[in-house]
Image 1 (spheres, rainbow, N blue to C red):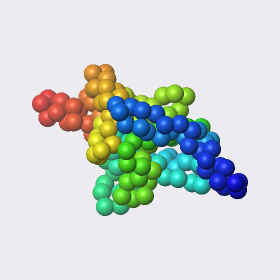
Image 2 (image 1 turned 90 degrees about the vertical axis):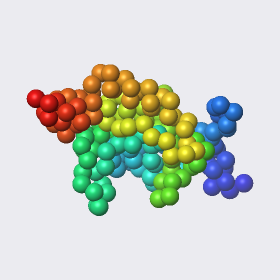
Image 3 (image 1 turned 180 degrees about the vertical axis):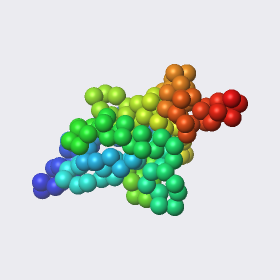
Image 4 (image 1 turned 135 degrees about the horizontal axis):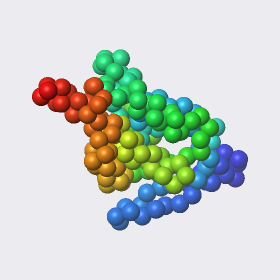
Length: 173
């Protein structure tokens, strides 16, 4: 068996069953290369740079050339960059569909056992979203988003000018 075959075989560490569906997890060393925006990162895995779109979270846009920068988009990207600085070791966990239409790897990103996708929602910097059939991380992201709403942080903050609560407060004042 060649070196590449050994590395590839070593990359798939386990299969986890959740709600009757088997999901792959990997144990090969994966490190953050850079943060693209509030829900997309580049990682190094087995010597290759891979673009990862975090599942079940949708952060405000900052990179779409056809759209303006959205409310709290830069803050979401900054949050993720502080949470996952270059060189941070992460674990990727997958759902049913592994790639999106842009060729990005779809995953739950874990650091020190914590789901980063949900941490973004808990900060109020991203909304829970389901792109069928990928629902694996949705319950945790949804719970975190509800927590952010109850704490009035991020997109739920009445003191952040671009948020809906602030606009409503301003209009009714």
